Amino acid sequence: MRIKNFDSKNIFAGTSEEYGLVISSDEQYERAKKGYGIIFPEPKEIPELPISKTNPLCPMSPYAILKSMVIF
Image (cartoon, helix red, strand yellow):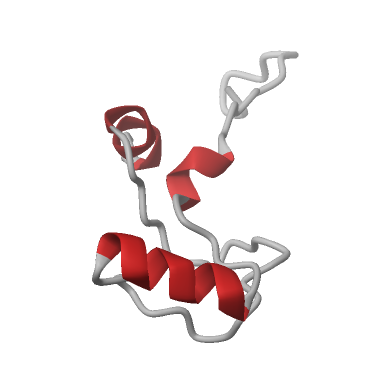
């Protein structure tokens, strides 16, 4: 678009679903471990909020998996 000098806008529609389970407290982490058994990847710090681009993607549904796939 830049090379052709088009006057247009790119719109990217994202979703927080790509991040899946985001731990907001120690209590939530313990409940998640009890309910799911294993949390992968383990959170580097709690809380994991606000979500940033460095948070690992942990999609938990088919929709989230498709949204997290990078298509070039």
